[in-house]
Amino acid sequence: AQTVTQSQPEMSVQEAETVTLSCTYDTSESNYYLFWYKQPPSRQMILVIRQEAYKQQNATENRFSVNFQKAAKSFSLKISDSQLGDTAMYFCAFMKPLTQGGSEKLVFGKGTKLTVNP
Amino acid sequence: GAVVSQHPSWVICKSGTSVKIECRSLDFQATTMFWYRQFPKQSLMLMATSNEGSKATYEQGVEKDKFLINHASLTLSTLTVTSAHPEDSSFYICSASEFGGAAYEQYFGPGTRLTVT
Image (cartoon, rainbow over all chains, first blue to last red; front, side, top):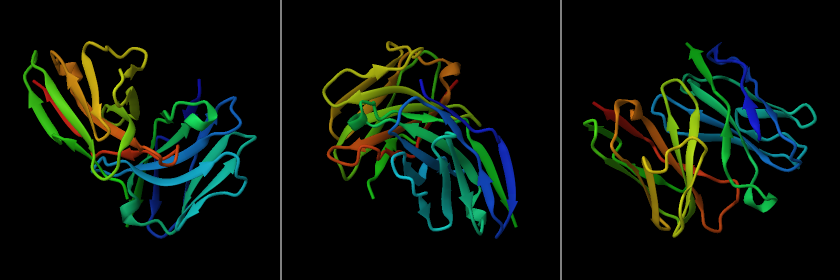
């Protein structure tokens, strides 16, 4: 079974600075998807960024980028120019999609609580 | 983007009663819906996967008779917590994947806070 590990329960960063959240995962699959979700105090889950394992290029979405190291099974999230609105829980997640014989289930890490300080 | 709603957003019920939570896809047809449970300061735990017109698939350790899931249409799935007890108090979140959409795309509802007194 796949597992996702987030080793940083809590992190803090000053506004406008850069922070990196770590995520490692364990799988024997070669093709899968990795995600970072944000859960602000409202508790609405918001997709931040997605990476397809067969793509070598790291995904980016505005201030958010990932460092995907497939061999090391590492998938870190970098937030640049941190804003107060980035304060949230961040969950790393793994999925093996149906098209690859999976189930579309998301396997979540335990989360990292990020606080952006003014 | 695709929107998923949940109703109610917060419910308080007495121990021993049953409560139903609805999950609706508002602007798309959902082939599959997922139900999660989240305790305070913890991650999401998948409870079950439901497909329209078929029985839900429950994760190991989740009581099927306690958490009844019905996916009667392509836009509605319901979770009924039967004979609720205080330990069932939690935050319940549903997500849905779109029929014909990208295999990896799931849309999350805003969640339902259940408090059992």
